[in-house]
Amino acid sequence: MRLYFFGIAATVLLVFVSSSSCDQVDYTGHKVVRSRAANVVQLSYLRHLQSSDETLDFWSEPFRVGQPVDIHVNSDNYDALAHLLNSAGIQNHIKVEDLGRAIIEERVSIEFRRELTKNQKAFDFENYHTYEEIVSYLESLASDNSIVSISSIGTTYENRSLTMATISTGSDPEKQVIVFECAVHAREWAAPSTCLWFINELATKYGSDGEITRLVDGFDWKITPVTNPDGYTYSWTTDRLWRKNRMPTGTCYGVDINRNFDTNFGGAGSSDIPCIDTYHGPSSFSEAESSAVRDVLIANRPRVKAAISIHTYSQLWMSPYGYTNDLPAEYDEMLRVMSIGVQALQNTYGTQYQYGNHADTIYIASGTTLDHAYTAEGILYAYLLELRDTGEFGFQLPASQIMETAVETWNGIKAMALEIL
Image 1 (tube, rainbow, N blue to C red):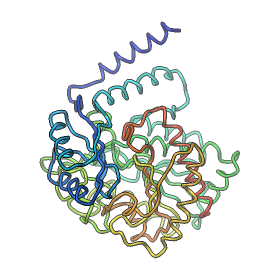
Image 2: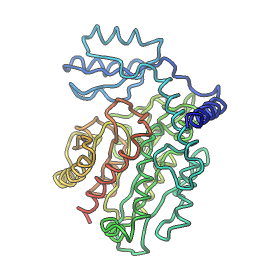
Image 3: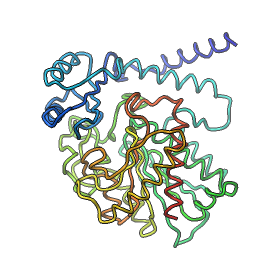
Image 4: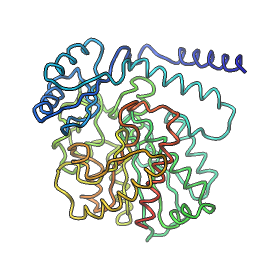
């Protein structure tokens, strides 16, 4: 047995080294620093750093006093950052010592599991998958299951199809619809893994599981597991931490799709600088991906009962608005249903979530799917979920946590859907 695993490990190392390219972004020595402002002066200073220092990559926003703020910094600039934070009296510590090593360990883990399961016919939900593997799984599921169909809802800049799965018992023009947009940000790999689990549960348990049978009889489910396939592919081949799509924007690449919708387009929480991660693009719906999500909602108007965006990380369940601290007129109902979903999620493994309106729960953001679904389409149950974790692993959630993340999130979604059925 020891020789068997040694052989697998050697094979994995060979595959990893041979598949690694000199074009891969090297994060060796990069760190993630967790900081925390104790007062408004320190919070203002963090915001100043974010807006003025392009060498710093803020993984979370300096939004509220006492809230942790994760900052990715390269090895050359770490000492300067630590000096600035310490001089301002801002509490800080290194959360990830070597981001490059963490990325290598993640990829080796993925390849090791692939080698272990390569003779299994079933799709491995406990590992991360490329976009091609995800689409292949959806095609196979649709060919084997009469309630599953797949369709292209658009074509990206790099000519990839935006593939959406529909789980439906038939063409009922009055049937309500639940729409999911997942992995609009490329580096958030736990998002597509979770949405694939939703699809699998609905497709394979219809007719045998009472709750799921009710949910499929009561709703059509439209789920796009990767809403940013160009960026997602790039995060596999070149830059593990890439966020945006791959649209050329002059000297840089990429538009943040979740800042490219129409509600308060170009407002606070988005950027007009093309090289910034929250660049909103030249105009609302300039991108194929945001246009595709918009068109799915329009095509199913007025049947869409809920529209859900799946992201990572922070363990949050949020409602509109993102662009303002004002609360929607129906906020009490949004909050009531949110609390039911969160309770079911937390009851699964004890994972703790915060919930509330987006602007107060995480930060101000303009041009989001969340606000578009509510303001433009009138979808009352428009939510955005940030899945595991709270920063220990961040965007590189270990594959060992994929299933727990998917199962607990699905339990929350089921509870929400049953409540609004």
